[in-house]
Length: 68
Image (cartoon, rainbow, N blue to C red; front, top):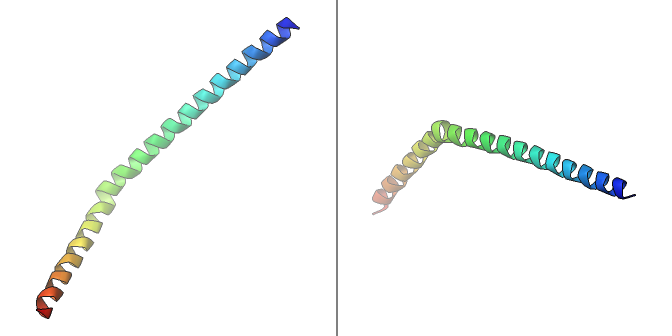
C-alpha cells in the first residue's frame, strides 16, 4: 500500500510538472503573438489613426474660426 501511495504521489507530481510546462509554453506563445500584433498596430494602423485625428482636429479648428 505504501508503494502505491508513493507511486501515485510521483505520478501526480509528474502530471503537475507536465501541465505547468504546457501552460508556460502556451503563455509564451500568446505573449509572442500579442507582441507581433502590437508591432503591426504601431507600424500599420497607428499612422492611419493619426492622420484621421489630424484631419478631425484641423476641421474642428476651421469650424471654430468660422463661428467666431
